[in-house]
Length: 229
Image (tube, rainbow, N blue to C red; front, top):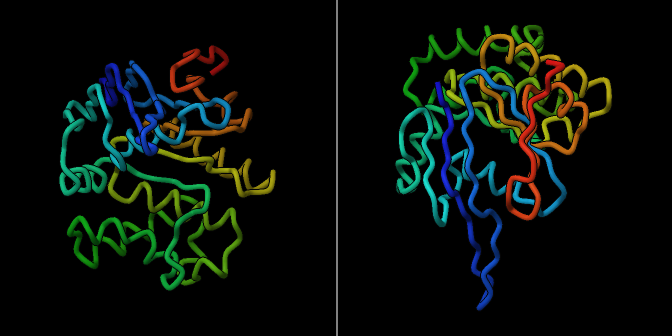
């Protein structure tokens, strides 16, 4: 099943009288359960692609289907609904709410989707245990290490059983041991059949991914399958 399909996707930014092409003529199909690493130098279009895939922005041209639905021209409210139901985000800086504890942070997406208080708390507890934080559920982000905060972010990304999990440099702020632990969790999500798209400069992620898409100057330079997987 094609989870993501994009055709001739472009993104232009207007800078005064100058137009900057961030992405140009991107064609891409991602199937359910694939583990994708998106790599390339700074300015190659990685973050722009992630924003478009995550429905955080709209393309200037081309088409984008997510789970079979054309989301290319949806308005902001419609894109917000798509994000809430179909996309799980993992950010380099975790983006946790400092005033909320682990369970409350994980529950947040479920609150916006209308889960009952009991169901969301129960599901959040199971997710916390799954990422190894069953004994830290009452702690706030400031009481957790960077690796633990990223585990909370992963659990939160899974809360609504998303169609696609998008991660932006998920190990970028972590020491090597914590980063390795996060990669092990991502590997396990892949084994469970989750679709992962990870923007990264980390060669370790590139080697672990099933498929590596290299961007250069806003275009796909190489699209390679890792046959060691």
